[in-house]
Image (tube, rainbow, N blue to C red; front, side):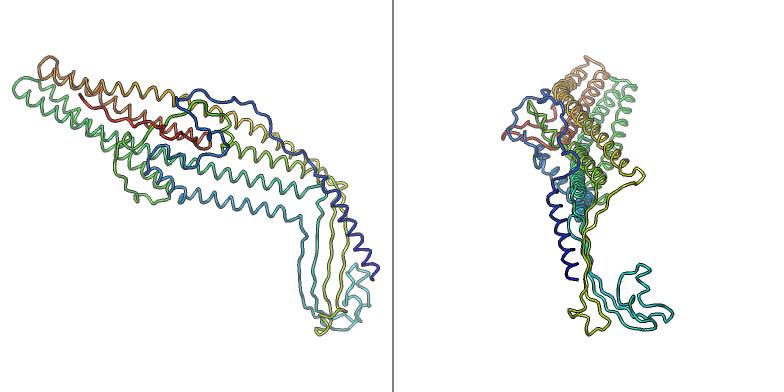
Length: 505
C-alpha cells in the first residue's frame, strides 16, 4: 500500500514538474496594437496656447469647470453621484471584475470537503464482494457479509487540479480582464454622456431664459408703441390700421412667452431626471445665458493623442484584446488536458473509531485527456474566435476613423460659430441703434410707423439668433470635450469674457 502511494505521489510530482516546465507553452498570438494612420494634430482651432499637460493620456478632471459656472458644476456633480444609469454602470464594473476572479479560479486546486452518515443493510440474497464485479468502488458495503447491517461514518476531501500547461485558463483570464476593461470604459462613456447631457440641458434652460427675457422686452416695446400709436391716432396723426398692426404684434409677443415657458419647464424636468431628482423638485431662478456662462477658447494644435482617452476607442481595443486572447484559448483545446485528482478522508463503521489512524483512506493520481474526435468542435471554435477577432479589428479601426471625423467636424463648427457670434453681436448692436433712430425719426414725422416696427422686428430677431448661436457653440464645446474623452488644460488667466446684451445708444 505504501508502495502504491509512493508511486502515485511520484507520478504526481513528475506531472507537476512537467507542467511547470511547459508553462511557457502559451497558445495564441500575443496582443499588439494594430497600426493606425493618424494626423499629428488638428489645426482648425481658435487662437490660444495649449498647456503642456494636455498631451497626456489621462483626461482632465472637472473639465466642465472651464465654463466657470458653479451652478453647472453642482448639477454635474449631483448627476455623477445620483444618476441611476451611472450607478448601474458602476455595478456592471464590479460584476466584470468578479468575472476576472472566476476565470482565473481554474489555475488553483479545487478542494471540496464532505461528510456523511449511512445505515447500510446488505441483502441476504447476494454474495460478498459482488460490488467489485459491478464496477463499484471498494468499500465496506462491497465486502460486507450478506444479511449484515451496520453504520458507515464517512468524511472525505476531493481534490481536482487542472495543470494549465497550454495556457487555456490563463488566456481565459486575460480575455475576462480585457472584458472588464471594456466594461469600465463603457461606464466612463456613460458618465461622459451624462455630463454632456447635463451641460446641454442647462445651456438650453439658460437660452430659454434669455429668449423669454427677449420676448418680454419685445412685449414691453410693443405695448409702449401701441400706447404711442393709439394717442397719435386719437388726434389724427396715425391711422387705425397702424393701431391694429401694433395690437397684432403685442398679441404675438404675449403668445410667445407661455410657449417658451413650457419649453423651459420640460427642459428643467429633463435636467431633474439626469441629476437623479424627481420632476418638479428643482427650482432654478431665470438668468440670461450670457450672464452665467463663459465661452471657452480652443487652443491651437490639439494633439491627436487626446483621442486615445476616448472611452469608445479604449472599449473597442479592450474587446479586441479579449478576442485575441480567446484565439489562444481556442487553440489550447487541441492539446491534452493534464489534471491531478485525489480523494482522502476517514471512514469507519463505528463512530468511536472514526477519527483514528486506521480509518484513513486516500487515492491520488494524474490523469490525461486527449481529444481525438469531437465532430469538428475544436476547429469550429478556433474559426469562430479568429473571425470574431477580425470583426472587432474592423470595428476598432472604424471607431477611430469616426472619432477623428467627429472631432474635426466639431472643431470646424466651433470655429465657424465663433466667427458667426462676432458678426451677430455687431448685428445686434446695429439693430438696437436702428430702433432708437427709427423711433426718433417717427416722432419727428420723417418715417411711418412701419419703419419702426420693422426696426424692432430686426433687433429682436438678431438678439434671438445671437442667444441661439451662443447656446449652439456651448453645446458644441461640450460635445468636443466628450469627443476627446475629457478636457485640456488652459493656462491660468486665459479666459474669454462673457458677452453682454447690446444696449441702445
